Image (cartoon, rainbow, N blue to C red):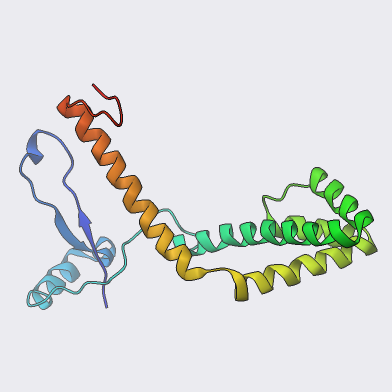
Length: 181
């Protein structure tokens, strides 16, 4: 199956009233003869794919980038859970881990865990516990359906608010909720 991309006209004097064109993604790498044959062959029903083409993700898809960020977040959650557990039954380990967190950034899960494992034998055990908690949380406790629902809702609400604010701004209508004049 071949994916298509919509190419919008460039704004300028010659593009007034111009319509967007649908161009196959692979067409950018074909010779003119191959493009002509493809147009003739696909004149009946143009092939489409269900995913948008997102440029700038050479290392992977946007979903992979989101998964990496979620992994860092899950590591943060696991550290918080382990800290909470340690606070109630092993105050010494709690303070050691708290001190380590103060010296080491939690922004990159892998670097954090590598440094924690190499810190000391006691910290190695805590690192293993964090890895176990992280895995268990992702597989059992995290509400993936809720994440999807909230993501949809938040994007829709943010888009609606931005569009409403823009319309109020350009139409010079006063809105008592936003105090825009």
